[in-house]
Amino acid sequence: MVESVLISLDGREDLANSVIENINLNKKLGKTVSLDYVNSQKFSDGELCVDFQNSIRGKRVYLLSSPNTSDEIIKLNLAIDAAKRAAAKEIIPILPYFPYARQDKKDQSRGPIGAKVMVEMIEQRGATGVITFDLHADQIQGFFNIPVTHLEGKNVFDGYVASIYDEDTILCGPDAGSGKRVKRMKDQLGKFHDISINYVMLDKTRKQANVIDEMVIIGDVKGKNVIILDDMVDTAGTLCKAAEVLMEAGAKSVRAIISHGVLSGPAFERIGESVLSEVIISDSLRKADALELCLKDYAETKCIKIKNGCSKIKQVSLARQISLAVSAINSHSSYEGLKKERF
Image (cartoon, rainbow, N blue to C red):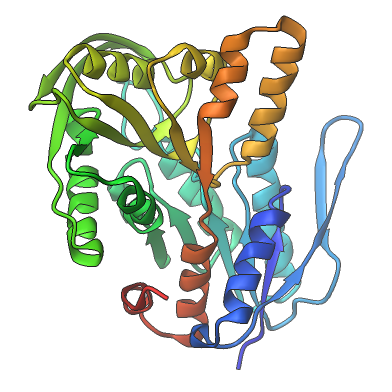
């Protein structure tokens, strides 16, 4: 039987420990997985180097990383290469946040397809499979020639939606492309929580990146507690504008559930001054880093809007879903089957 080891690459020890705990404490998830570490070095010119602390020969190696910077992308690829040269039997990156996923097609006539570039880098270095979470576009899975275990937001956030649900609660898709996401959550709530919930959609036109021209609501939100479902919040301009439009149309409250909290630039300040009651994100990215920057900005500026933005953001962990995916691979069983057990 192949021994499995989980290695955190870029400061995700908190998530790695939670995944290990989920697997090792639940006998239904099969054999245990050990936690190991990688040594990394950055030279004075910025060049990176990595090596594994212990032997990984013949092992199934899971590399946990959320590479949203160029250095982290390079570090991931160096680690895959190092694992291959150290004779690992299998190399499976766990990427809760997949970099360049927004570039899933050519948006300009002479532009790249960034997601495809990332896939080819990972595959060519020697990855034998990948686990990822809530891709910006489902079709990115088709870029891969290796097995992809794609974790969906509905399995992470449905419990939270169920916990706050009342008869006035409805879901909201923030754009035309979010229909599948909203429908999946609706079906999930009906199947596992016996909740019948309606939804509305927003139709928006965008003049340029991060700038919305117009939003139109398809459906009635008057007197409703609206939950916006989306895959990513970056500068939060679109999200805050959507909340404003919904409240102006008579919504009782608006909150958002977002898979990936990128939270860059003015995001915290915008959320802080917005009509949003709260923003729920996963831990696909390191919220601690974003909050640290946020609180630093607040200390320097004393801007109450930034502080309010920090207080509105809450986090739900991916540890359980990742542990199910890892266990399914280790036991050669069905990930879908493990999900259905709901333990």
